[in-house]
Image (cartoon, rainbow, N blue to C red; front, side, top):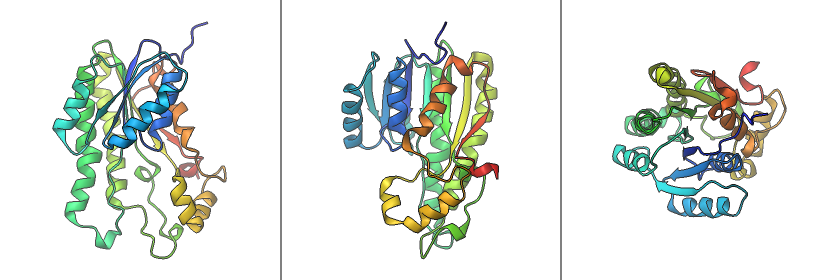
Amino acid sequence: MQNLFSMDGKTVLIVGGAGYLGLPVCEALRAQGASVVIGDHHPGRLAEAQATLAGQPGAGEVTTCHVDMADESSILACVDSCGTLHGLVMATAGSSNTHFDKLTAEEYDRSNRINLTGTFVLARAAASKMTEGGAMVFYSSMYGTVAPDPANYPGDMPPNPVDYGAGKAGISQMARYVAGHFGRRGIRVNAITPGPFPPQAVQDVHPEFIANLTRDTMMGRMGRRHETAGAVVFLLSEAASYITGQILGVDGGWTAW
């Protein structure tokens, strides 16, 4: 029987691929046979990610490219270095991490230069490399669907910022729009909305915050960093060959209450 999840012979660009959620996606795709291009803005993390994948099972090639999602020329250069693409994962985020009352217009614009303009430029450029069709997955967020509850943020910890939430909501809509635009070319586009996936450093420093987030999930726990990877592999693979323009929650039930 055909392995519907196989990525043999496919090349996938994962922008944000050296990050907390992005690296497990790279690992999962390569385990399914894909050649992966890891795009990231942090040179040290790129080198570490490439070394990590080189030591794991997988026949596909592992290459890297530096990419700044706030810089159109950087995005275009990264995509141009990939050759033919069969998949794209956009797993980056712009965020001011600033309280609503202190957020400047410049900070807001910077975040959404990354979230919205960067994703638009990346998707259009990647599609030009998908001469055989392909699939894209954008990382949106639960906070692109629902607003953060200020009561979950203790002390002077600012709630998830408005620039991040507005940008991620826009990414969800962009996935629908781009899916419609490229559908007749055999390019599928979907988004996932991760729920609470705080890195270990946040969990260590803000235990009350973590307890509040845990309470608000149906499953009663935080997401583990590898738990978005399966959804991404599925949406890129032939197992999802008739799925496009959809937004899939990977949030432990957070937005289903």
